Image (cartoon, rainbow, N blue to C red; front, side, top):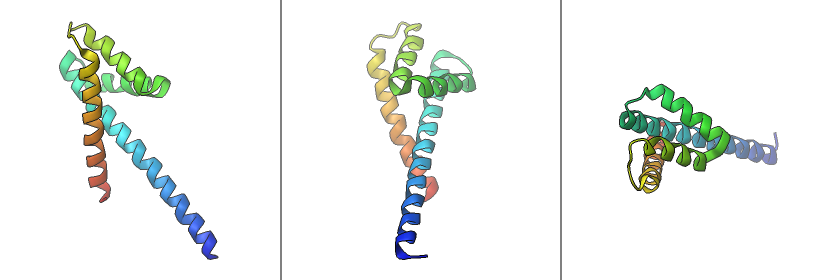
Length: 105
């Protein structure tokens, strides 16, 4: 194996690790959001998680924001957009810390 082969293999491994980390962070963030929503709405956590994951895959983060705005709208909360955006940022930061701690970074 040449030095170029080794570098290529290392670059591929780093890429895979970055993708896996990003996936784990997003999955953890989604779980935290689902827990918050389920508590807020008095719903099942797993069902909330399924809905968030489905929305994330089909419409991305903006889709999650709109879905959660709709769900919270039932409660009559004003400024739901800012509240949800704040929670999404907080839970993303929490997820990054948790995932990095679990992989020792």
